[in-house]
Image (cartoon, rainbow, N blue to C red):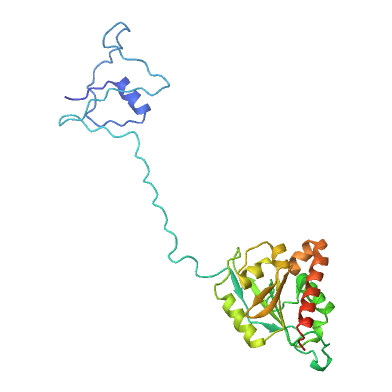
Length: 253
């Protein structure tokens, strides 16, 4: 059967977004709609969607386009294979902080050397900036500025986050075997996680004894945190005194 639509019905379909292809209507006077009492009365359009009686498609009926073509669903983006190749935390080669210090002027009781592990914003100049100057003051208070074998291993954050390279513990163990320090100072929670593989809160890490490749290690606050929390400086100084007491108690010369 063919689809016969008058101008009013076509206007209603167009308003609903339905496009009808077919032969144009025959030029004939538009017949007004029958009264409401007629059995074939056409209901007036209303704001609610009206189910138009579109005949089912048959071999003789024209093709009626859908209301709208839904956009194709976006396929999920697979994660990068193997994850990120660049860790967020890298360890730099330890460097001497006071290489020009005279060994003959090194006070007794400081041991054969110290290794300091901490996160640094300026790995090439660990004693630069406000945090570096505070670290220098801490070491000078311990008279370590007179020791030529005080080394600093800088942890540099290359991307946001604290994901450490899995090679850091092995690299630090090699550094301890080469430098043979009497004490390893681990400054800050980020350094403690990277160097010791510990995830406890910093307060608990400060309290417990640690070993790094057979060398005693003490955990305390990092200089950047001390700048933000002035009231923790006394606790940090107590940790440094504890490290000195361990070195002297071990009888290291």
